[in-house]
Image (cartoon, rainbow, N blue to C red; front, side):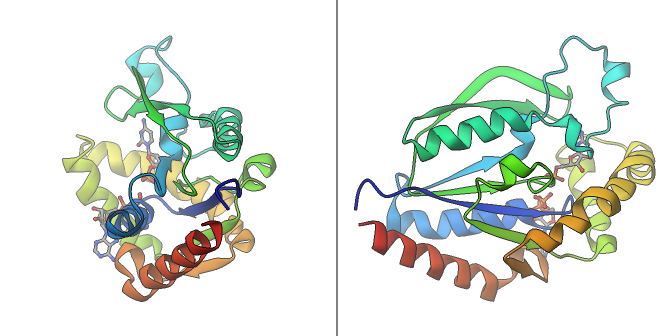
Length: 214
Ligand SMILES: Nc1ncnc2c1ncn2[C@@H]1O[C@H](COP(=O)(O)OP(=O)(O)O)[C@@H](O)[C@H]1O
Ligand SMILES: Nc1ccn([C@@H]2O[C@H](COP(=O)(O)O)[C@@H](O)[C@H]2O)c(=O)n1
């Protein structure tokens, strides 16, 4: 059935819990089977609010772990467009300048859409767009170690800035907004982004969905 509704799969959990690795592993391993027209990935981080009107000093003070930091209305609108088989212009976010770039990535509608990010379940209308809700339940101490390793290399952060941000925003917001959202999940995944059994189970579910859509 070429007209059947796309399936939107949300992958949420703490920062550095393995959401991105998990989503990209599923994507890379399924593309040879179902093609790039079969599956796409959207990052919630791309929908961090535009902050070019703020100075750099002001931007580092933003609480990036609070739901208000995201333009969830735009992400919800984009998911509705994909469900209606329309392409979207996804913003491109820069962690070094703490704002969006001038670029956009055009994402075509695909039968399977993976969406990954820390606060996907915090907004009821956004949450209602997801057909399958996955929560990465990685211990917070492991997440912290991986965040330090990743952010010093990939996001050019110092240990001091990571520690300060972690204690004042990342950890408190995790307990306030992320961990309670586990209750909305259909599937809870332990062991992080390399959990082979979880990857295989989700791939099997996606294959089944694709075969029903054809
Ligand atoms: N099970 C795992 N074992 C080892 N490293 C992992 C595992 N899961 C994730 N990582 C690594 O931890 C870091 C954070 O993972 P990432 O997928 O970027 O997290 P998130 O998207 O949840 O912020 C990355 O460098 C990733 O390669
Ligand atoms: N300018 C920014 C924007 C976000 N962050 C942090 O990123 C985390 C979410 O991304 P993950 O890939 O780790 O899920 C979130 O915890 C923010 O603190 C940032 O540091 N700077």
